[in-house]
Length: 430
Image (cartoon, rainbow, N blue to C red; front, side, top):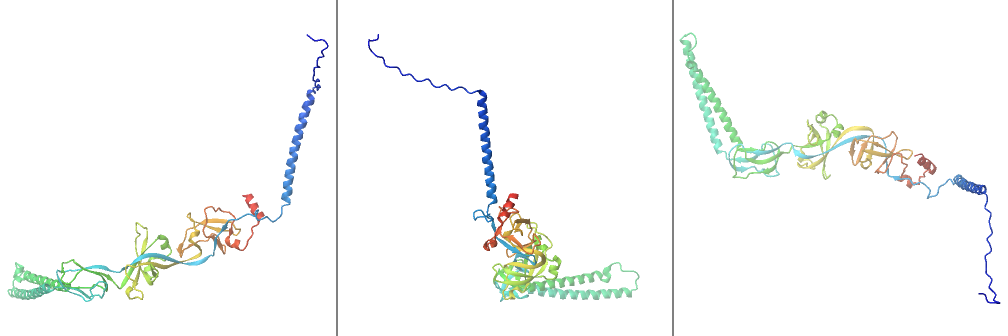
């Protein structure tokens, strides 16, 4: 209930918001299209400006590249090879052995009563020199008996010959016709027996004489005594080895060679017939000797598939540097001459049998090769081109590819420059 004369506070009210009239639908759609067209035009404008800027920058680019922009080429080590004529030299290895090696054995039984003055290990003995003297008394006795048997056989033969002649005369005086009923009448069988007995006695005499000679064991050739197996007082049996001897007039070296090495040599028959000279070098390189090809073997070893030639050196112990049996040597013999070939380091050939080289336009190329022969760490191979000088890569890498642009170390040292524009064009073309 209202009190009298009480005034009520006024009530604040917000003014009414102004009313915005709604646009027509056609007007709103036209405004969205205009905004889309504007954005598209703006994007094309930005793209055109970017392209124009790139073109201008490219046209105004300086001719010289900075050090950072300059292309860096792989550097390679090369060796310059030129075609030439090469004298091939075939190398093989072998052991020096004496021409003859024997174990000298006794042929008679008996006790050793003496040794030759030069019969010692390492001694040089001449052919016919006495090495061992066996007790010969029993053999002298057998020799005397054999001589007696020969003498008796000769007497018997003479008697039979006389009796046979007498029987023939009596038969003729009897003037009997025909032939005797038995050949015994004319002593023909008795005469044949006496002749055979004499022949046997003479053979036993020869055997007895040989036995006496065999009690003197002698060197069968000019030799070196490798080992002595007996001493004075040793009792020998036939077959007992008394010494090991080797020939000292000639040594031989068997040198196996591969088919490729044989292909570099003259005909096999000519090697031995012409006594082709060769050089022998000790394994330590301290001595060399001159020898010759004595003969060639006529078979190929089944295990190694190699064929050997036999080299020889005469009077090896009389040389200034004696060539001793048992020495391991390297044999070198001149072979055929090869025309239009090059020599390259062994490291220049890859495991796949390829050799890389630098072409005149400074790019890499490779070609497969089969080395003709090797000498002093160098391979002799056919050249890849007919150029006067060929730059062969000393040690190619697996990363190399044909056509790759490279620079040699020599070119880097002399400051050789690369044409950047040409290199860029090549890279783009690839």
